[in-house]
Image 1: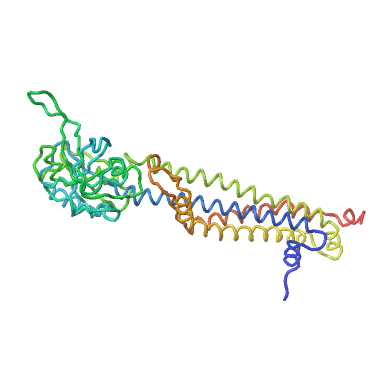
Image 2: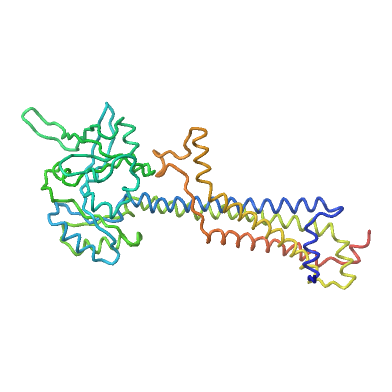
Amino acid sequence: MFRPLSIFIGARYTRAKRRNHFVSFISLTSMIGLALGVLVMIVVLSVMNGFDREMRTRVLGMVPHATVESSVPINDWRSLAASMAKHPQVLAVAPFVQMQGLLSSNGEVQKVLINAIDPQEEAKVSIIGAYFQKGSLAALTPGSFGIVIGDSSAAKLGVGVGDKVTFVAPEVTVTPAGMFPRLKRFTVVGIFHVGAGEVDNFVAMANIQDLARLHRWKPDQVQGIRLKLADLFQAPKVSWQLAGRLSDDFYARDWTRSHGNLYQAIRMEKAIIGLLLLLIVAVAAFNIISTLVMVVTDKKADIAILRTLGATPGQIMAIFMVQGTVIGVVGTVLGAALGSLASLYISSAISGLESLFGFKILNAAVYFIDYIPAQLLLGDVLLVSAAALLLSFFATLYPAWRAARTQPAEALRYE
């Protein structure tokens, strides 16, 4: 089958023949180095994508996208919620009441933020229902003073479903005998595990009417309205638009104020780590330069013979560009394939290692999730592969140009 001379000879030079075993070994190491660089870059970017996804789905699935709150108890929250739900960005709404304090049981104390919710409405704005280990939101019936806590809190307090915990409110009750902290006994009716340390450790849920009574409000009074939005990044704008339509008692909050720094840090880390890993790929790609320079030195006599037979400098240059491109293509394809495979199974592999050796790589008390997530994106694979191929191509230019400038008489003088 006919093949252009440059492609035929360039592809042939990438295989070991007689005295160029060492040069072919260097070519092989260049391929492996490029493949490893591409593999590592794809895996790391996939892990960063996984953190980004978990931040948006799990953490922000529990944390309100935005809230409209009032400095005084809201009486007619249903009509207020109905008017907010008409906004095109608002997917769902739910009432809430919050109270910070301490949970105590078995001599242990744990700080907690109780989100008092309406169980039926909460399912529309939160993912909590999918992460229950025991119990459910339906168990939070009015007047029962039930509470749902994370598994980390349950483990620290040493309680399970059906056990009693004491909630210590940050208020005092004045009596003739003196001032005493406000205490309320709750029954644990559910335990959840979201996998986000901040949520599993410090968030609890109770019925909205029970916490209103603890606030000494009427049962149908609430603190604010929680909003679930179609576009997370529109939260500041939408929440302030909705709050601006109401009286001066209302104000808005959104997730960018509570978790925006964490999200921006993840995005910035992905960009910086991607740039640093691209330099690793660049080093591996530019190893092709040293490989081709050695090939050119080794093949000076062959180049001279080709020139005397009529090969043009352009053809000679193309020969070595083909060889370098073959190294780059094989290394990039191999790295992209292995990197994609590793990204698909890295989460389960690390979970297996954690179970085998009995340790956790990510501590939920330190990080916002306690496992290694990964999300492989085709765009990342294509971008990394294109960058590696481009760098490999540029790496062939100088050695190929040197080969094209080889003078036949000089090359054959000592042959």
